[in-house]
Length: 334
Image (tube, rainbow, N blue to C red; front, side):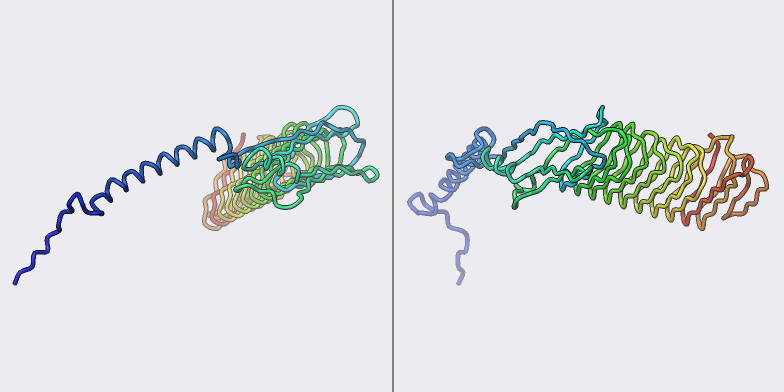
């Protein structure tokens, strides 16, 4: 006995015959609803007056002036901008930024930010404090600090994830951030600069700088005296050095240096490339475990094999030692 198993077509009177058109109307209404919701959020910043938009608000604080010989700055995800200021005063101005579903919640986020300025003797402290949680879908409120500093000021500046930029500094001290970048332009003085995962860029006439970063790059132009630089996975580029005594070390980054210099350079898997003036007076010693060595300098008393090259340039008054594990070393004249 055979059974007919072919599908049976629905007749117009059956309920599920009308299911197809109903579903199509449902999808159409859903699409229209989504379009309306997007329009309300982007144009009005609210839905039925509930305020569900993405809003940003800011509040400025006028510059204030102080007299101090030492400046301490503390921030979290705040940006710090420092410029050279005429006269003897330190000036501090700020802009607070907040985010929220609507204007009111964005302003409430701003109100949770407090820029506190205190002074104890000759030390001026500027600190950004947060009162309670005020983040919004990954957008945490933050402060832009703009600080003017006179020449000769001692600095102690720290921020966590914000950027740190300075221009025209004639100062000493330290500047540090965890995941932000640091940039110093047209600056001088004995400064210690450090970042964990950010890049460091410095230009000017630095005396005895110390620069450290973990996974960021170091770029420096214009320095003399002892120069300490450390990075793990970043590159080091130094230009325009004048009588610099180097102490450079990187794990997997490359090193490029130009100028008059001496000291030590060490890397594990990175390459080293140097450009030295023809008038340099030093004893050069470079070695590698598995890389290549090369130099176009006119060295005296040369000793060379596959993994080692040494010789004297000029009067040989200083010493430069370069070592790498798996990287190449190239030392040429400018």
